[in-house]
Length: 92
Image 1 (cartoon, rainbow, N blue to C red):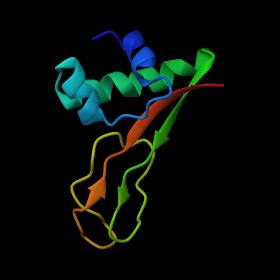
Image 2 (image 1 turned 30 degrees about the vertical axis):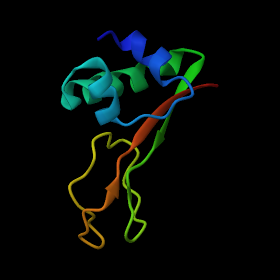
Image 3 (image 1 turned 180 degrees about the horizontal axis):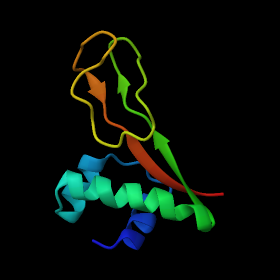
């Protein structure tokens, strides 16, 4: 998958790494690496990446925005009921 294709795919449509991986038939780790590179390279374009962080549905703990893959469990309550992080591309 080309990284430039991710811009069109994510423009105004927040998606998780797993959703993107299923669409493009790639492993989630490869998609996450492409997204990390894309976020860095968008600094010189008219677009920006908006990351909705992973969040524990039990206690509300919000994970860091740079974590693109779903965490295993919450460090605050040790629950595993976690919403996946989502990435969206927006115009500046």
